[in-house]
Structure formats: C-alpha cells, structure tokens
Length: 171
Image 1 (cartoon, rainbow, N blue to C red):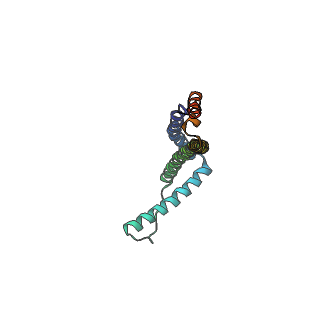
Image 2 (image 1 turned 45 degrees about the vertical axis):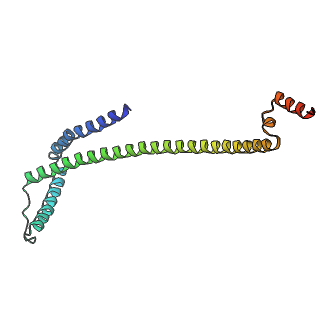
Image 3 (image 1 turned 180 degrees about the horizontal axis):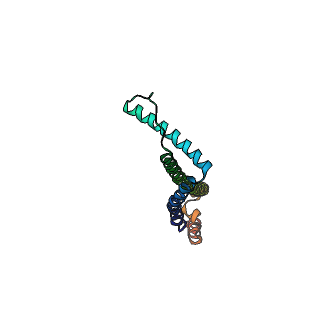
C-alpha cells in the first residue's frame, strides 16, 4: 500500500516540474532563428483561426481581412502555446499512466475474485459429494433399521443376548 502515495506524489512532482520546463522551452524557442520563424507562422495561423471562430460566434463578418500579429506578439503567443501544450501533454501522460495503473490494479483484483470464486465452487462440489455419500449411508442405515430393528443397528451385545434368551425360554 505504500506504493500508492509514492506514485501519486511522483505524478504531482512531474506536473509541478513541467511548468519550469515549459518556461525554459518558451525562452529557448524565441532565441533560435529558424525555430522562431516556424513558431511565428504557427502563431499567425492560430491567430487567423481563432479570430474567424470568434467572429462566427459573435455574428460578425468573416470575409474581412485579418491583420497579422506583430513579430513579438506572435513569438509570445507561440511560446505560450508551446508551453501550454507541453504542460497539457504532461498532464495527459500522467492521467493515462494513472488510468493504466488503476486498470492493472482492478485486473489483479478481478483475477483474485475469480480465483476465490473457483475455490468456492470446488469446495461446493466436495461438500455436495460428501452430502451425497452421507445420504447413501443414511439410506443404508434406514434399510438396516427396518430389517433388524433398533438393536440390529446399534449392535449392543447385552441387548441381543437378552432378546435371544427371552425367546428361547418359554414362560
């Protein structure tokens, strides 16, 4: 049971550490020229898509030209998007890990329940066989009791001898 809190603390630590890592990614993304151009194009595309969606939601005209973001705003928007994407991916990975761990735990519990159920079935079969054997023995005893009477079943020597002597001596 000690593994459960350790795993939860580990995932919490991973989520907490992902924020500084995301900030580091954001700062490095803005420095490299080729990557900077790439993220600017991503930010401009994201800006155009979100602006069109917002205009449709609010009922404004969608055929109007959308002004592009200036370079610094585009870099900032792209790095924010990268950082949030990284944090989201870490959270999703932690969630998937937690779900899989829980599923494995449930599978182990289910296997233990199946094994316990099988053991109970085997015990039931043994008890049913023992009950059947006892019924056969009881039936045999009842048959013997009808044939010999109570003294024949109990097989008391004194009772048998007393019964024989009474029959042998005429009164």
